[in-house]
Amino acid sequence: MRGFSARKKRGDVGMCKKIREVNSLTPEIVLQKFWDQKIPVDIKHILEKIGILYRENDFSKLESALRIEKDDAILGLALSHEDDLGILYSSRMDRDSTNYVLAHEFAHCVLHLEPSEKYHVELKMSKDLFSANRRKSLISRYLNSHKELQADRFAADLLIPTEALLQFIEDVQNIDMAGIAKHFQVPKEIVRLKIMNLR
Image 1 (cartoon, one colour):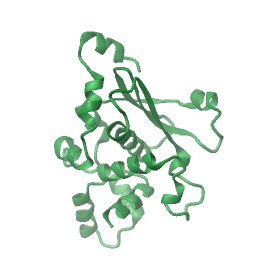
Image 2 (cartoon, helix red, strand yellow):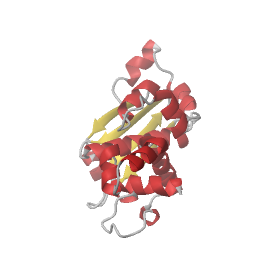
Image 3 (cartoon, one colour):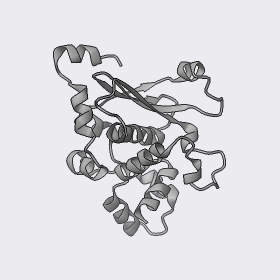
């Protein structure tokens, strides 16, 4: 990612140290330390406060090079390379999906990137969560791994703070998944996962 090398030379960032710092975070700690108490949760602002770089990206060439099926797409990726740490997210997504993918990739930084590894990439594919058959259970849509489900649970808890959700449900009568998703600016699937987490 552009900007990493120059910052590294100036001594502004020690990314291995940054990975070690975020490895101890939970959604609750992130919200307590970095959230401004506004809804929707501003994930970009949180990433800036923590010091994680992010950038919108067109993944079409990478998808072609990796021979990804036409009904699938790269939504985002978290990567570390030696002292570098960053998040890229697809330029083809709407606002709600962007919020979710940034939170999901941040979760990979927290849960799955190791400071000792020289190179690591976590890819978020559209098939990991979104399915053409919306009637399938949420869990059955996870094609990649347990890590994807862990990252989505983290993202759901970060983007939909429990107290804010309970207050919203109390304040608004006859609310449905779509209304909650619109309020928190996340995909409906993440609302379902958050409710599953609460249960």
